[in-house]
Length: 396
Image (cartoon, rainbow, N blue to C red; front, side):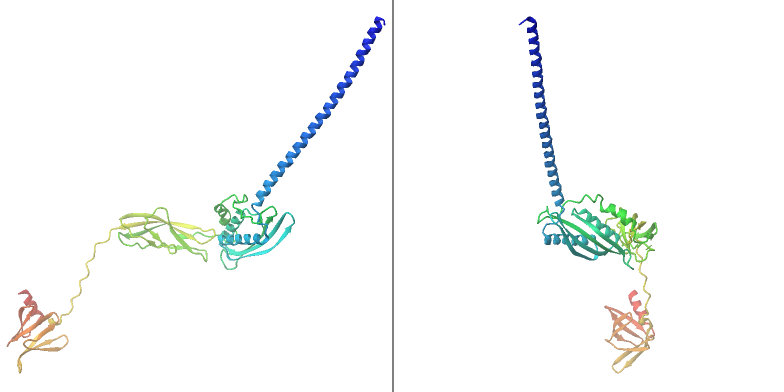
């Protein structure tokens, strides 16, 4: 073989080797690409399955969370539990003439049972607001499908309230499912905030006017004696009543009659005491008026001497010795009373009691009578007043 042929043979061999090597390399690359695509596919499938599992777990959590607001799957137990809660709801809301009724139920196979109840009662806009607030605060799977509110004729602020409530018992719940303990996310404000927004604008009644009460008043009191003060108030709205209370600082022993506003207080010190009396009407929304009362406490006045009793007419002052006689049984004196026209006949040893004069006759002389009173002897002469003679004995 010539040198040229050798070179040519080597070149052909190299070209063949290059072609064969390139083919093998392409085959390896293609196989690796197929395997890489399979790995990507398997990873994607694994990710999808993980997502399905995660979604399933999340759905299970959601179902469990929803089940907390479900009624028990047992139909009778579900109806009894919800009816018991409705009774509590109605009583707490303060409805009168209330009634709750189980209307019936429908069944969505494999998903839930829907129970329907009706509620009726009578109350004010404030009662209705409280009812709805407590209803939506409860985390039951329930809703109000119908609500009807109407005015009660000739009864101020009273409303007839009727509603229909639908509540679910889902199949995922327990046959002995407990009443939900947590509050619902549907209510985000307090009852006071709702009252301010709803009751404060009472759409079912005319505007409520403020009670009329003087802004300031003065009262007098005496130390150690009970005060007597009652504010004068009026209200132009028919059928309303007014109650009273003391606002702010006041003596701890001071009381007020809520119906009349009469104060009850016995001050122990002198000086001025300021208090605020508030009159609140029974309208919806209620309005009020305040009165500042300044109570001036003074010392009790000095005691007043009792009036002297008018002197009474003394019978003895108009009684005189009219005669001194010698009778059959001894000397005898006649005492004549000019007031009643009567004559008293006296002799030794007789008792005399006439007006302010009392005594015992010791003797009857020719021109006098001798008597004794409390061991003291005294005399009264002819035509002399018994009272004058008796007074002379006291002064001697």
